[in-house]
Amino acid sequence: MVAPAGVLLVVFFFVPVALGFALSFTDARLISPKPLEFVGLDNFQRLLDDPVFWASLRNTLLFAAVIVPAQSGFALLLALLVNVKMRGTNLFRTLYFVPVVTSIVVVSILWRFMYQPDGLVNSMLHWMTGNVVHIDWLNDTSTALPAIMFMSAWQAVGFHMVIWLAGLQTIPGELYEAAEIDGAGRWHTFRYITWPGLRNTRTFILVTITIAALSLFTQIHVMTGGGPLDATSTVVFQAVRVGYQQQQTAYASTISLVFFLLVLTVSLIQRWLTRERSA
Image (cartoon, rainbow, N blue to C red; front, side, top):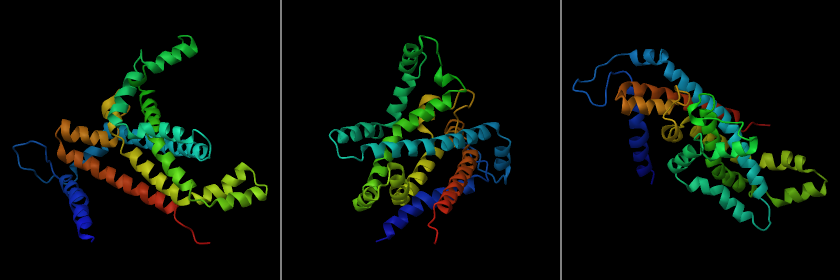
């Protein structure tokens, strides 16, 4: 029964990881007449001296640090709002979920047009401020990454709202009835019943949002191409650009290996922080 899963795991996980690890110690290129040679730690030394890598790493960590709490918190708020029995609730759930089932490439293209100097976002700002505010969102180093953060949170918040909603509906209603009889307010009900009841759900959401944030690529590729001045470049985007556009397979493997270790470390820390503690 486990044989097919084991084969898939070996073929699509262990083999690529082992191959990437091996290539990071060579001078392999995507297309080259020369046979690859062992170069030791040269690619890792180059990585330490590469300012684009450090800028990409900083952007990746900043994106994750903002997106994880903002997106999970907003999704929880939406889930609490739609977790009521009233007319129109299903309509709001559907509207919030529509961006999730839309291709991220299509969403990125639409938002790229909306962020243009004469796009919808600036038109709304002009109307609200009387033509005072004028921002070139994706071509300004101070606004490009925050603009992508906002779009990314908007696109994915519906998915995590559904996960939060599923977790909310597993909490027994008797607990809320008992809290109401005891005269507990909304805050105390949330703190002592809802939040503890969402323990497993929030662990799942925390891990999935973090991994998705650290692997940011499509929005960058479609909306900014890593610019302006590498202000939106991320680790995954740099690995793909170096590996395919510049054909430096060995260096791209080195970046990917470091990224793998980064995600593994963050996941282990999250797992340790969210572990079940014995009383």
